[in-house]
Image (cartoon, rainbow, N blue to C red):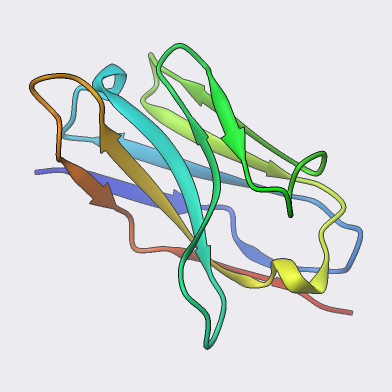
Length: 120
């Protein structure tokens, strides 16, 4: 059974930091590109950042220079360090595992999400 379990969300003031963590189980972690997505109320889910098994990263323009994605292939974890948070970063953040090998192509798994609220 595949599980992606996020943690680390919460309430933080503007300018503050949070570190999200996602623990993956039931998959061969290195066969997946890992990512963070977010969904704000009334908006569509959007990409925040992704990281391949060889640590190649992408991120959206809205978080460049503020958020950093990383992964630990032995612990099967992916992280999102969020600095200089802004109210517009308020959303539910979801962990994603996207299959990238011949035997995992087409597989996409999602976590349940963790709430991040940026407010004074």
